[in-house]
Image 1 (tube, rainbow, N blue to C red):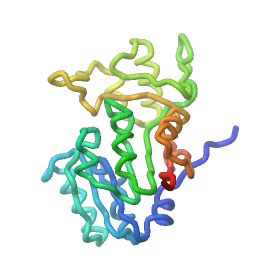
Image 2 (cartoon, rainbow, N blue to C red; image 1 turned 30 degrees about the vertical axis):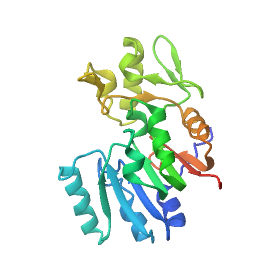
Image 3 (cartoon, rainbow, N blue to C red; image 1 turned 90 degrees about the vertical axis):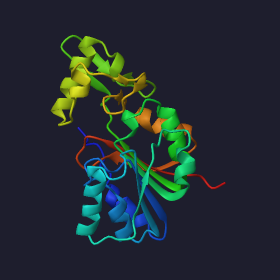
Image 4 (spheres, helix red, strand yellow; image 1 turned 180 degrees about the vertical axis):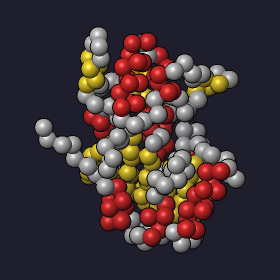
Length: 235
């Protein structure tokens, strides 16, 4: 069986970011996956980390320590919720936008992507956990087609178990899908446990819906997520 194509995001950034303004949306979590330092080291004219975590939190401190460790200066930090209606006004426009590990957690996929696209001046590099076209369970086979998605808060008990087992096999934290958790707080969705479960084909269709030209796509190097590299067409 042919192996899925892998996409090396670092190479894409290094090859396209020189002289461009760059923002990493939601890159604080885990810190080591952030792309601000690679972008600035590759010659970006501006490097910004934009994240929902409040200023002064441990993740901001870890990011600052990582920048110091890599000898990167001149970066900026913005506290912003990319799903908020005023997020584009807070962010402004960047030539190159990177966003990973956020898309499948947001309550409103279209508010999220609409905001991301509106702040993208030229390139968008978007990554998300995706599901295979099929998962075989003990009772039935779940299909993840190009035109539909599953939502964790409303999964049936059997589907929750099958999907949770699959995610655990992939080394992903699946407790939010397998366990009984609170998906709402004060009537509003909690981003952490709020999982959309969709295929790479679904992801690319949603990106194309916003009129972007897909330049490249493929699995991330570890194989547990998918990346789409797209360009805003010339006016």
